[in-house]
Length: 219
Length: 219
DNA sequence: TTTTTTTTTAACAATTCTGTTAAATGTAAG
DNA sequence: CTTACATTTAACAGAATTGTTAAAAAAAAA
Image 1 (spheres, rainbow over the protein chains, first blue to last red):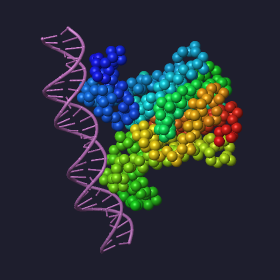
Image 2 (cartoon, each protein chain N blue to C red):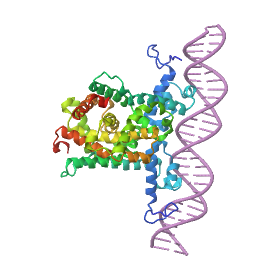
Image 3 (cartoon, rainbow over the protein chains, first blue to last red):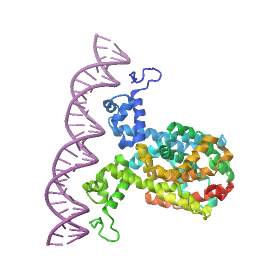
Image 4 (tube, rainbow over the protein chains, first blue to last red):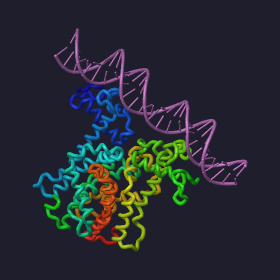
């Protein structure tokens, strides 16, 4: 299974061909989407030829689903890991959580998921069960909304989770638009975002303290 | 240019063929993306045949760019209209603004823009100039970030704009994932979201009041 | 009615892309 | 060395898709 080609002769850094393909495929699928992705581009990127793609993964479809699963499996835990590590202070927890979330979001993975689910909703349906617990965080949010039509003084800790996601995700997604249109290079953009997690954390901590929430409310 | 076909015989509601095509095209492009969209599907949806698409818009590319422009033109003003109507109370303004933004975001338009810009960044480059003012709101935000690495007490009014966008956009985008995976129908989802704008508004108003901002800070 | 414009029909060329195959070559391991 | 597996090469079939065209039909305008 190991590979010693012209691409990478160093024993330490050499990876299996399958892995090389998956890395290339993910990159291409994330930027072009399933429909825009070309098997040729993937094989080029992986440093192999097109026939070998079909040797490993019979079809484009199968290869795509493998990628989709991997991305989903990386994302879903972010919906439920909140509940662990009960001893930590909530301020510290918040910061760590935001940092993890942003690390994930820095790739195009989130957009990739959204795009492909719109294209083919069945992709999710079959993979939902095991993540129901995490998803319920968002259902709770919607249920409250429905039942009580919360007003001012009622915006409660259940929303904190959604608010955190919002504050982390949107600026990163939008950066695509703004960096392209304002000609900010990816490297430059990365610099700009260095301090962002702290800023979000601090803003939320302020907000939570102001609202007099107890530790048990948000953990 | 007017059309009286089997699709719609009522004089009042009849629209031009070109419009019918554009409506259909937008729907298809927004859900499938440029690469996934099929001319056949668009013509079916518009209630005409495929040859007529090319009669009106020579190529798929040209048709797509027309749609892209329209969506972008609907989105960009949302980045700059904030500055108008100086007499209104800022609470009222905030509410109206959020409501407008959410109305736009309820379609897949935002996701459409992100997806297509990733696919082909040049789409934006040529259309950026006239919207520079609006975009600068976000640049300001990034510049501050870069220069000062703001901490706790420094999260200031410049971020408010980004925060509003975040809170409005993300839950709507994510609803795609959650509604699909939890089998909530679009209709049902719409109900759930009824009270959301007010909730966001009130949360922000609370936050702003707490932080002792003056009207001039956020307008 | 006559003319012009819009729309349909049907067929087709050109291209692109996926998936397959067969034969050759290279590589690892017994 | 020999065998088994991994990889390349090159070619091809089949399908899907875009864009074109010519001729007929329908609708609108004159």
